[in-house]
Image (cartoon, rainbow, N blue to C red; front, side, top):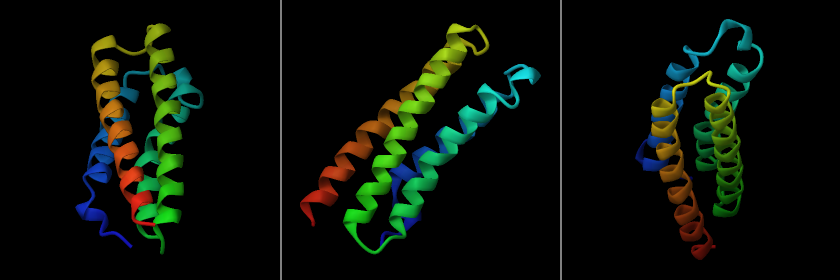
Length: 119
């Protein structure tokens, strides 16, 4: 098991999720059960899966949950780009979040490789 509070990737994913929740306040009310819900669900999935993996008993299990978190990050990126292209979200705010996403995706890949080398 890994100490969650020591994982920089988890801390960055928490920050990402906070930024996503703030940007969702800009979405129209009629998107509450559509795009807003999907974006929030994908965002919260990232730190949640990192946390679940950290609490597992093996690196193999942790890698599995990091992989799920990575998939959620690409899902979130797609939804944010769609929101921007539909002019529901401001480009500068989406670009900032995508920069965070890219950083987390890179960290995730490196972390998975490190865990695989320890199996």
